[in-house]
Image 1 (cartoon, rainbow, N blue to C red):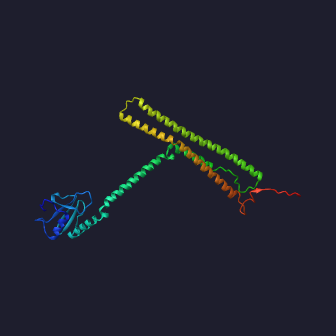
Image 2: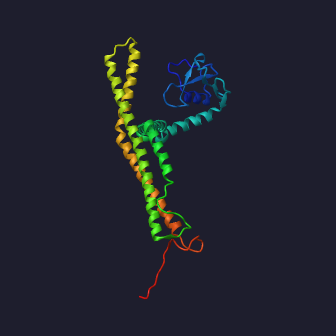
Image 3: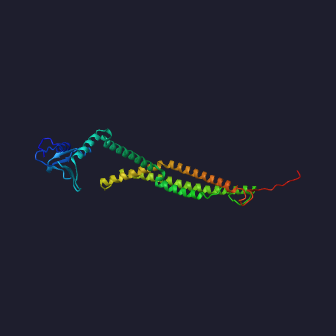
Length: 302
């Protein structure tokens, strides 16, 4: 190995061996990868044999260059091939696209991760504010949904496809359907009101309980350790914040229930009217009756 003060680089060693100028009496030169934070596979530095990195190093001779990696088979190639690849690598690194490729890749990766973190935080914040995500509200909405499913069986108009009505009979049947529907809707709204009142009462009671528990922390003397007291205090403050958030959403919850009921009642009305027009008022040879209404015409001398 050369005894020069400044060690040679991998390119210089390959060039000297390629020209046939051996470094003194040495037949081999050992190279390590240069210490740099960038990826430069052809930036090598000359070292003594005992300083060669056992995990990865290169051995250069006049016959070629050998790459040795611990636990893997050695790779060898001619000097001119290695030198050609090193020159091409240097030329590519002068092109801005390749020169700043890793920096640009790291920046884009950081930017994508930052956007994903912002999206995740927004999603979690919205998810925590969704009314169905609150256990108490979700249970109430489920009960109201069951009532709405039973309400879909309500018939607001006479839908008998085979009966021919007289005008007075049709008026009586419509009035009877109206009274039955009004009675059922009254019970339905009473049940919905009971569910809403129970939900609001439970939310307010929970808020009052959490407030009382938080105020008692300052007055009660405990023999527990400071760490346990601090943990309990943080837990109670967290419960108080959740209770306050839940109580602040009661108005939106009632408004949501109101909109759900209005939309389902509108859908129920539409279904009854469409079914009455398409089925009850249908005429033709395939119908089981001659017409929807039956009337008698009496002719006098006038």
